[in-house]
Image (cartoon, rainbow, N blue to C red; front, top):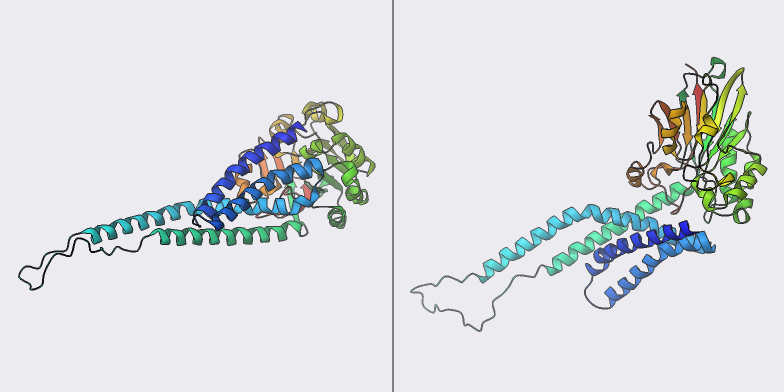
Length: 415
C-alpha cells in the first residue's frame, strides 16, 4: 500500500508540473485576461487532479469508472507534451522574427522626416499630431500560439485515437526462430507459445482472456509460457476474468512466472489461483521437459523486484539454475529483461521476458531502453539470448503506439 501511495504521489507531482506547462502553452498564451482564461485554468486544474485520482481510485478504492476518462487523458496529455516540446524550437524562432520585425518597424516610424527646403507650404508637423505606428505584433503572437495549440491538440487526439484502436484490437502473432547450440536434434522445432502482460483489470476482463486463450490454442504449441503481469487487481475482483486460462492447451504443459504487478495484487492468492487453473507456477525452480527423445530445462524466477518471504520472495537464480546438468539447454522465464544480466552468469541459453510492453507509447520506448537491455524482440546479452514480447494487454492508458499487442510463437532450432 505504501509503495502504491508513493507511486501515486510521484505521479501527482510530475503531472502537476506537466499540466502547468500545458496551461501556459494552451491557456495563458492563447487567451487574454478574462472569462476564457479562467475557464481554461479550471479545466487544467481538474485534469491535473484527474490523473493521480484515477491511479489511486482504480488501484486502491476500486473506482473503475475513473479508468477510461483518466487514462485516456493521460495518453492525450503525454502526446500534447511531446508535440508542444517539439514545437518549442520553431516557435522560439518565429517569436524572435516577430520581435525583430516589430523593432525594425518602430525604428522606421520613429525616424524624423527630412525637411523639404524651398518648398512652399513645407513645415514641421505639429508637435501634438499623433504619429502613425505599425500594427502591434501582439496579435500575431496570439495567432501563432493559437495555431500551435490547435496543431498540438489535433495531433495528440489523432495519435491517441489510433493508439486506442491498436490497444483494444486483437494481439498480432509474432513468429520467431531461435537457434540454441545445445538443443538436441530430436527437439528441433520445439515451439513455445509466449505471452506476457495480459493485465486483466479495470479496462480488460474475461473476453480479453478468452481471445488470448483461443489464439494460443490455435497454435498447437508444445509449451505455453505466461511470463508475468497477468492482473491488476485481487482474485476476488478478477478471478472470473482469469478463469478461461484453465482452457489453455499444450503438449508438455503451461507455465507461469510472477511479474511485478502480481505483487501489487496479492501474489499469494494469485499463485494459488493460477495453479488451480492448471498452470505450473515456477517459483525460483525448474522443470525437466522431456520431448521427442531429448531433454530441456525450463526454469522460472520470481520477479526481480519482489521483496518478501515465501511465495512473495525475491528472484533466486541459484535455486532455479544451480546444480543442473550444463550439457542440457535451459530456457528461463523471467518477467523483466534486466534479469538476463544475472541469468547469463548461470549459462542460460534463452530468456523469455515481457514487462516493457515494447514501450507501449512511442517514443517512451527510448526511456525504457535506459532501464532494460532489450525493449522488444530478440537480443543477446553476455552470450545469453533474450526475447522480449510486447505483451497482450496494456497498463494505464488503453493506448498502444508503435508497439502493438502481441502473442509470440518461439520455435527452438537445433544447430
